[in-house]
Structure formats: structure tokens, C-alpha cells
Amino acid sequence: MINKTFNFLNQKLLIIIFIFCIFIVFFSLIKVYSNRIIFSETDKYQYIEIESIMFTCEKYNMEICYPTTKNAKINMEIKAFIDVYITRLKSDTKYYVLKSNDEKFNLLIEYEIGRVNKDIVSFIFLIDYCNNKTINNTEIVTMSYNLESGKELTIDNFFEKGSNYYLTLCDISKEHLLRSNIINDRILQWLIDDVSNSLQNSFDGYAFSSTHLSIYFNTNKISSKYNDIYEVKIPWSDIKHLLNKNVYTDF
Image (cartoon, rainbow, N blue to C red):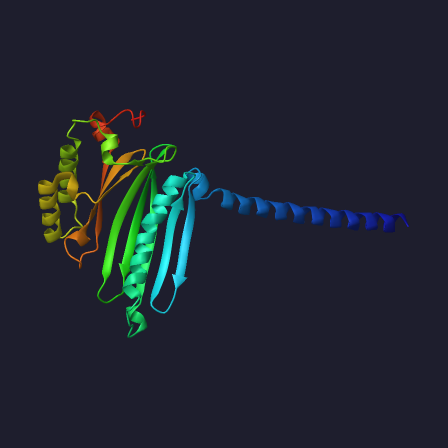
């Protein structure tokens, strides 16, 4: 009788331990899953979330990702920027007659984030717009903001007035382009000539991070058959003497 009772208690204890282990594993999985959710773009970039638009129909496919912030003014401006491309897509396809699915229009917008500090952020949008026939356009567009005030920042905000900083940026950009082994000679010469003649107007975008300034060049401005984008990264330490300390005092 005692042995039976002991065996019964052992079985009951084993069942309790088994159930307890299941709960432990279950809650561990919840914790891991929750951590995956918590460690998102929102946490990584402090209240910057991802919005997406995905739509497909007979004439076009649309896949768009864009950021939303805690600042309503910034969100409105970004959404207006996105709407320009959506409107263009709908306009281009309104009366377009497809002969095959290969002629469908495709709009893809992706983005990356560059962050200087908790307030200053850059959004780098890569836009790919094509229909595999007559249109094949890839470009980069950058927008930078102070998240607290909602003010859009230009490169002038980062440099001291009267410093002629753009001359230094142009020289560094030309040196970088000349050292590149991935640019064909024709495009390289065009970019060098453009930087030499147009100075800062030849830059097609800027993005700011805690370590460097990025300058972008779109080759589609040379010809519609070119769709490459080149980035020149300039460490802040190389241009520290030109910076406006009121913008970011930690340089």
C-alpha cells in the first residue's frame, strides 16, 4: 500500500514537473518572441516606425516602405513625398494598354536610416520605377530632420557660414570617385566634370550619421540607361574644422 502510494505520488510529481517545464518553455518562447518584437526598428531608432503599402492590380505592382515618427509635421511631409510617386504611377498607367504581364509597371520604395543623435536623423529613400520596357529608373532621395522640432535640415545647417565647405566636399568627392574601381570611365569623367563645374549642385543627396557624412550621386541624370548610385562617405573627423558646433556638439 505504501509502495503504491509512493508510486502514485512520484507519478503525480513527475506530471507536475512536466507541466512546469512546459510552462517554462512556453514562457521562454513568449519572451524570445517578445524580444524579437521589441528589438524592432522602433526601438533601434527611438520611436521611428515602419509603414508599408503593398498593392497589385492588372497594370502595376506597388511595394512601398516609409518611416513614421513621433512628429506629425515630419510624417505629413514624408507621406506627401510618397504620394508623388503613387500619383505618378497611377497617372502613367491610367490609359496604358498592356500587351503582356512583362509590361506591368513596378514601383518599389525602400529606405534606410542614418542617425547623428537622438534628434537628428536622415532618411535615405531608394526608388525603383520601371515597366521593363520603356521606363527603368532608379534614384536616391534623402530627407533629414530634427525629430524634436520637425525642422527639415539641409547640409548648410551642418557647416559654418562662410566656410566654403562645399569646395572641400567637392575635392574629397572627386578623389573618392577617382579611386573607385567600379565606375566605368565614361560615367567617371561625367561625374568629375559635373562636380568641378556645378560644385555642390552636383550632389544628389546627403545623409548624416554619427560617424560620417554621405554624399550620393544618381547616374540617371546622365542618361536614362544608367541606374547606378554612388556614395561617398566622409568621416566627420576629416571636416571637423568646418562644422557648425551648434548642430551637433559631440564632433
